Length: 565
Image (cartoon, rainbow, N blue to C red; front, side):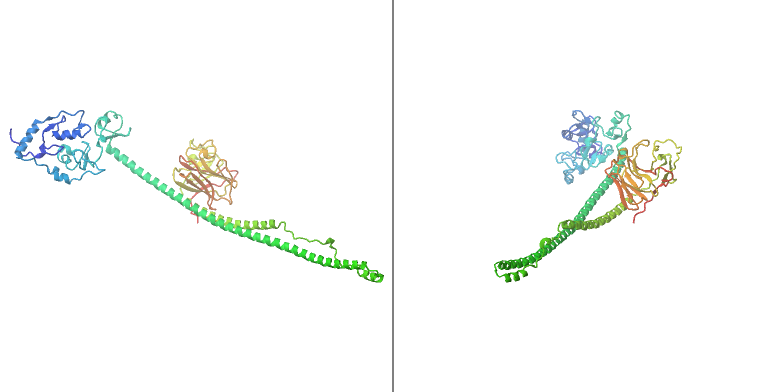
């Protein structure tokens, strides 16, 4: 046999697995050559039998036969390089020293699928071979032309998951219809009627969706962080209110105890003084009676002694001096005690008067505090001002809208308008063009010189023909009728207004289910509908009320918000 060309190199006779010169070369049915020991050990470590180069899977282990041609060529190569007497040189990349220098696989890292014995850390994974390689075993993919075309990625575990279970082919495409990854055979068989795109194309689409999702999640996080802060602020406010209420209660109760003590002292003093007056009067009368009793005893002794005398002259002379004793007529004399009944009642009346005065002072202070809180609340909700304009397609035929969509009043004359399912035909209502399905919004409407009107919000799907104005039908409104505000709750209650309304503010918190109405001029809350359930867009709704012979002719005007001072 002719000698081997000198242009041959070790690379022409290297096993793809051990990267050393072939030792007992055998070939697989797919035509690739390996050391018999290397391929046998490789298959022993795999679940199935497949070619490490082209990744072709064999149902059963092939009957490996020695490739005599390659074996002879290897022998010629060994002879040419004069390696018969010594071991074949090992490639520098696969030298034991270099292997030892490569990092060992650590927990959580991807191991090399080719390494025998101690596995080294993989540096790349091949999407065609579905094998992860360390730096040494990756060398053929950097040298052999056919292997250079294989896409390499960062080390990945469980590469078999990238194979189609049905066709045993690489998952390279995506079916948007079924939302699954498919191989080339799937695309032309099971999914031939579906639009199929490459994984990269779907990746770009889903990446945009992922970025949008990330933005939405970030917004949700911020909203919840804001809600947490609001809850904490509410707790802090409640704590401040509780502390203030306790302090006020201590002050009022201390004043009450002081008043009660004073009342008790006054009662004791009054009753004691009246008792002393009665006792002094009785003591004087008793002393006078005792003096008269002493005089009468003395007179009785003189009378008895005179009754024993036989001397007529002495008797008559003495008896004359005993005829008129100087005594007081006690039949009309009585002790008049000072009245004490009713003293307690009088003291209690005085105590009640004192307490009423104290409570009035406390109520005035509380009213000022609440007014200050309401001023702060109104300033806060005014920050959510939105610009809304009236939608003529929803306006009742009797309503007249200004060109800028900011004013509406009743013309008392119907207009011929195009039939529109969005139009109100039985009630003088009109919606705005703008709707809200999240967050907070606030707008103000001038109601000056009006005797009747209606303001609020309505959901998008409300009935436009025949309906009842209540939350169950999708209306959250405030109705004004002859100086009284009436919420449309069930049952409705009348809310007297302290002063003539000039401008009404409407605030909606979609997530909190809150609709609030404010008297802007007085800076007070008129009414709040709480625990509302919103499941679709909300539209501001207005009604100027009927004309009533000019008594209610003024328009409703959507006004810009002027921050309260």
